[in-house]
Length: 102
Image (tube, rainbow, N blue to C red):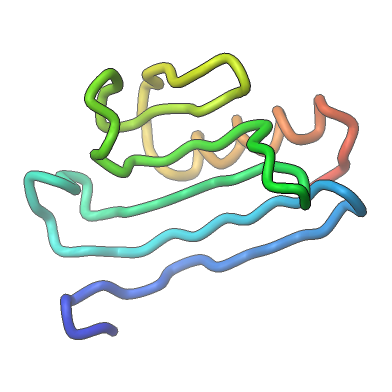
């Protein structure tokens, strides 16, 4: 646990040769910034730095709700029904791009 009360729950990176997945989830104290007590990022991108898909709940996008998705086309709000369902959606989208991630 860190000094600010955060505890890393998940840290996973997978390399697909040119593209990668990185999932990081922290349990954090419930606050206005993180009302679910979770801080997460699920990134699928290229090793060159391009974001293909990223889900996160960082409250730094004034045009998006707390839970949102980044794509090449911009940022859009997503319904958050829990970390498990969101992770499954993310995995399905990675697999739909041709990279197999179980």
